[in-house]
Image 1 (cartoon, rainbow over the protein chains, first blue to last red):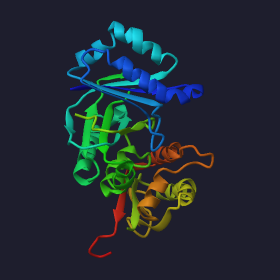
Image 2: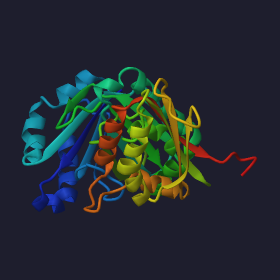
Image 3: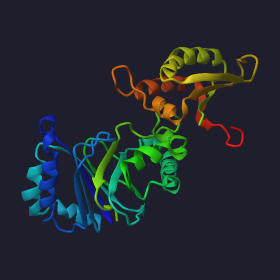
Image 4: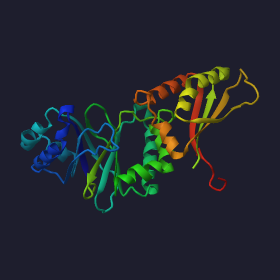
Length: 216
Length: 113
């Protein structure tokens, strides 16, 4: 499976349009070919970093189908006009390491980051191993995926998408943040004070409310 | 839970005094603003600096639990901007005087706490 994730930032004078834009994109996306799942939502104003205003996550059977969806007339006619005047960060990534459990609503959260060149390969591998430890220790993570970015359009060459689903925002702001596996181990790769520091500070954290699981 | 941050810094031969002065002037004031409390500082070899030998300096900081740890980690400058670039600038300056360093996060041992 291949995910196409877009984070759409509106100019300040248009921020109030985010609900309407999400609804319009939902309608436009219905005519795109190859889409297995599609979730579009206003970005939660809580616990976000550099996330823009609307998040759009689609999954496809393959990268080829994801790329093809943006080349059809329906895209040019219905989607492109809606994205005019916005800044879009687009990430494409195959789902390779994940665990998804059936559940109800809650929140979806993604941390999108770039490991700097000096972090490869050893630091990147250590960071990935640390992140992959977290679901085994943080009980509020119900579904997760750690994915290498293979396609990136936008202002920063992001390398990884670390996404999870929680029953509620409290699962992220509570146990996820307070568990020692986070602040005592994994965070060193993100902390400018640690020798392990390899993550570009211009990262993205995006959170959105979901009424059903969107990861598969 | 008590939380500590331990810096273990291996300083180039002959530069231990210079490093201690730089750490005191360039790092300690900012750390204290971030509500980190210096609980101890040690060195080895002990007793004196040897110009022929690298010295390892240890600085043990205490913070107010997990909340205090995140507070120093996510600290802001007085104007509200991220302080990480100032922190990074110090550690890059530090790197010019050192051979290696480690930063570890510690807690009390459960059986002894």
